[in-house]
Amino acid sequence: MKVYYQTPIGLIELTGNEAGLEACSFLKKSRPDISPDKIKASLAGAPEPLVAAWQQLDEYFKGIRREFSLLLRLEGTSFQKKVWNELQKIPYGQTRSYGQVASACGRPGAARAVGRANHDNPLVIIIPCHRVIGADGRLVGFGGGLRRKSWLLSHEKKICGY
Image (cartoon, rainbow, N blue to C red; front, side, top):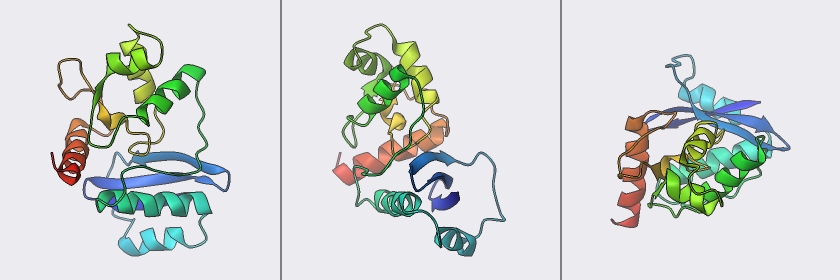
């Protein structure tokens, strides 16, 4: 099942079922057929993990929520899951380099593999791949686009007061 959430930086599609949230991603193309009424209607009868994800995203974008507590259904390699677990440890409003995440995963020198795992992250924002930056501090690599990555980091820093 799918539900939608309208953010200040684009429409998000949430996918999953009673077993958990499977995907959270920005839609690549505009969807004028998905109106605010249709977004609310998509929640009616939606499985609890999707409703919870919608509510927690709403709290995140309102600056109320800093961590997500959701039932997830993640599919990936053991390394991807290790990376995704490490991403969830990056504090709200802070960043880590790809190399730092690789080291935290016990694989120093595997920055490119971390970048690939980030790219394959099915749960944008919820597993905060937007908090991973280049070794030189530049914003690089975000499936939702660097404009969105910049917005998300600025949003978090503003809420934290830095």
